[in-house]
Image 1 (cartoon, rainbow, N blue to C red):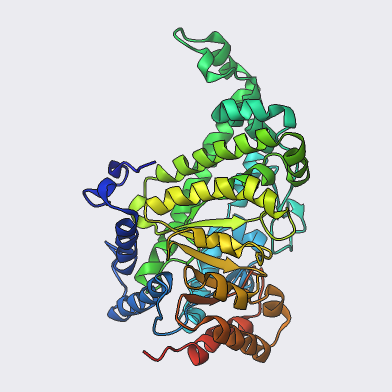
Image 2 (image 1 turned 120 degrees about the horizontal axis):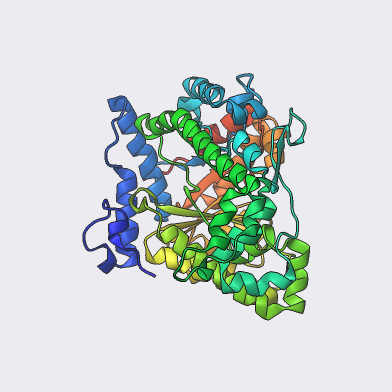
Length: 458
C-alpha cells in the first residue's frame, strides 16, 4: 500500500518513487532539522540538534557522543507540584502549569520535557466510557493510574459481522457497548441499506429523544476536545522550540492485530479459546485488522512530521502461547503491518512487554535499522547478542527499582546495562515498564549513569 504524497504536501516530490531507505533517511533528516521551528534561543537550537543527533545515531546503530536516556517521569510533574492525577485529567490549566514548573526546575538536568498527555476525564464522562477505570470513576480519587476493564465486547457469533463490514460493526454494535452515551446508535440500519431514496428508517431516528441526546453529547465532546487542545497545545508546541526532540516511542500508534482482537474485542480468555475452537476466524479477523491498521496510519494527514510507529506488544510474550501458535496467530499479521510502514520509511518502535527471550530471532527478519525495541523483562545481554547488530535496543531497568531503589542502586544497575549493551552504539538507557510515580532521585541516577559511563571515545 502506497501513500499518496498529496495527503501531506510537506512530503517531497517523487515520494512514491523513493525506496524505503530513502524515505527513512528523509524522515530522520526532518527530525534533525524540523521545519518551521522558532527556537527560544541559540542554545535551545544547539541542544535540540545535539539530542536529536544522538537519537538518530542510535537508530542508525552507530555510536553517538554518549548513550541517550529515555526518561519516563510518569506522573511526577503533577505530584511534585501538588496536583493529583484526577485534577490534571479534569483541569487542563493546572496540568499545564504543573508541567511548566517541572520543566523550569528539572528539564535541563534530566534532558526531558514534560507535557500533559491523557484522555480528558470529562470526555470519558460524557461518553460513559466502559473500557477504563480512572481516578474518581471506578478508582479512588487519589489513584495515580488508570486501569483497563477487560471484557468480551465482541461475541464469538459476531466474527462474520466484523469481518464482512468492520465499520458497520463498530458503529452499530461495538460503540454502543463501550460508550454508554452512544447506545442509541444500535437502532440504525446498515448504511448500505440506503441505495437511492432518502430512508425514513434512518432519518426518522433523529427525532428520537435518546438519539438527539446522543448527538448533543457528541457535540459537547467536540467542544471539550477543542478546549483541551487550546489549553495544552501551546505548551506542547514549546517542546521543540525549547530544545527537546519528541520522545522515542513515537506519536503514531499501532498494535499487533492479535492484541487488538484480544484486548478490546474478544477479551484474552475468549480469544485463547478461539485459537482452538475457530482458528480460521481468528486468522481472518487478524488479517482484516492488519489491513485496517495499515490504512488508518497511511492516511494520517501529518505524514511528514512523524518518524516512528509505536506498538505495545501484549500477548506474544514467552509463555502466552507456544512457538507454533506464535508463528501462526501472532506474528504474520504483525509482520504484515510493520512491513507496510517500513516501506514508507517509518521506524518501528516496539514496547516488548513481558519476556521475549524465546522470540528474539523474529526481529531480525526486518531490514537493519528499521526497528527500535524497548524491552520489559527480556535478558538484555542476550538481546544485544541476538538482535543488537540489526535493531536499536533499550529498556529493562525495572520499574520497581525506580520506585523502591536508592540512587546508588539504580546507578549501579544502569552501569552494568551500559557495559552489557552500549558497545557499538544502537543502545538507549531506559526503564522497561514505566512506573506512575518513580523517585526523582532514581531518574537522576539513570541520567547521571549515562553521562558518566555511557560516553563513547570517538
